[in-house]
Length: 289
Image 1 (cartoon, one colour):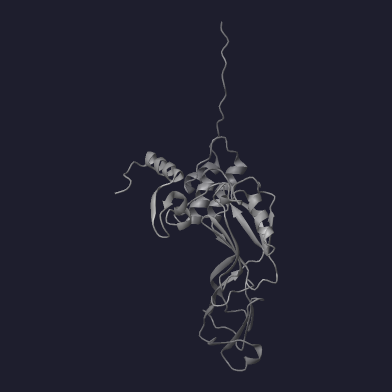
Image 2 (cartoon, rainbow, N blue to C red; image 1 turned 45 degrees about the horizontal axis):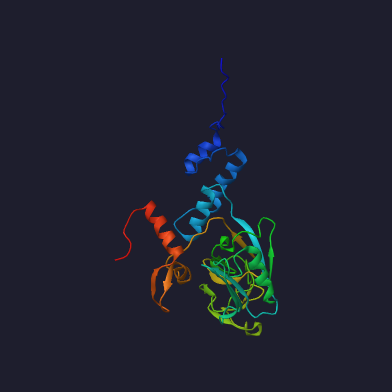
């Protein structure tokens, strides 16, 4: 009698995690163990999937069983007037004075021969400016593409922070506030002054931008809020294996199409043709006019 050989296949026993996955629309991946599946289920509540740029990044990364990691930490020279780091589309832009749009350097991360194609190359270029220090973190692989760093900036927005109930000396959640981005909605904080000695009448308030501190003559009444932008001078940059491009971005559009002049794009580049053809195989349509 001939010997028969069988190859066992993994089979997951349906359990409480799978029940939660059905409710959250996140099924278990093939051969995925409970600890990894549990992490993905919890991540649904932390990083919501949506049609927004970040929602797509986090949602697709999680669906594929991949992870968003902390890749690089970037800190500015403390003597820069208002430093900032901006990752947008294919570019990494370093500002010495963000408020006045003063750029230290700008790196294109898309081209393989552009000098900033990998994380290691980008870190080296940032350090070479002398104005910023970049450090590759433990979870990152220096040989990965620097385009895995998705759109993010060291200048962050706080759309609303409560002021009521904090007394007349209010420490905000963040320091290094950006001038020109601050707005206070309050019935009894009505006049901003620009030195502490001017706090000599009811309704006045002073903001120490660097310390993130508000001094007032009266405690803010219920419903008082502040909105502002602040700069993160110990900026930890996140990266995902999922790279999403915006076809409306001029930076990426110039990679997709031959640029005839400063405003006009012509026929697709080899890269553009490959992407268009791949899209057409998934969703047949027409191209051009």
